[in-house]
Structures are given as C-alpha cells and as structure tokens.
Amino acid sequence: MKLSQFPETLAVVRLGPGAEVPRWAESSSIFSVTATATETSVVCAARSVPTKAVAQRPLTAFEVEGPLDFALTGILSQLLAPLAEASISVFTLSTYDTDWILMPRDASERAAEAWRAAGHEVVPAVPANGKGNS
Image (cartoon, rainbow, N blue to C red; front, side):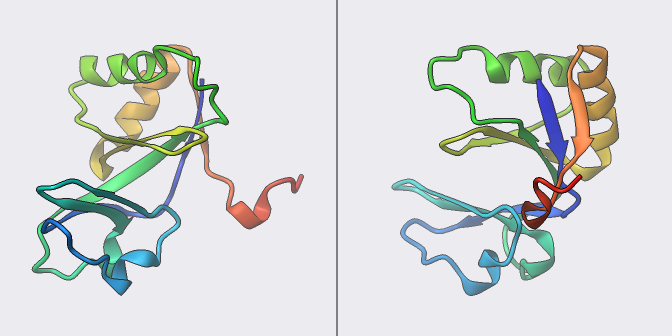
C-alpha cells in the first residue's frame, strides 16, 4: 500500500450531541464530522481549535492511496498491525474513496518506519492543486 503523510497538524474535537459544526473547524486540508446520538466529533486543523475545547492534538494524518474498492478486505488490518506492534495509537476514518490514519504527531516518523519495514510506501502528500505536476 502507498500512504501519503500530510504536513498539517490536526486535532480531533469532541462536541456535544447535536452540536452545530463551528466555523473555526472548517479551515483544514482534512475536515470530517461524525455525529451520533451521544456526541459529535470533528477532525480539523489544530491551529483553529480553541484552547478550552475538549480535543486530542497534535495529530498527523496519513492517507491510503485510493480509490479503494469496497470489496477489498483487510486494508486497515494490514496497515494497523505494524503500528500496534510499535505501540502507536491511532484514530481512523474513512471517506468514500479511501482510509485515513491519524496518530500523535510525535509518533509519525516511527509509524512511517514501521510501514516501510512491512513493505508499504510512505511519501509526502501532494497538495490537491499540485496533482498531475511533474
């Protein structure tokens, strides 16, 4: 598998059930909202999060190269096993096309090393406006 490491520092913020997504959360290269009956979680740029917010930060994100076929099995298992062996905690999320793995920023280099040792490729992320440039 090929993973792209994003340079932006992220946070996972816990909001109350039914909370509206704050404007500060929307300025990020990666932005995700997950809501349940008991909470609303937002993944966004750490720089935007108020200091009093309940949040886990600083985090680094790795994107699995996609799009991934919905019929594929074991993608996250293959990628998370080396991290578990290296005692690296993760927060995962998925989009329609791919999977994302977030971890404490200070563990990102160890994660890249663990993935490379397991045969995966880790590269810096290419900005969306830079795709296709050689």
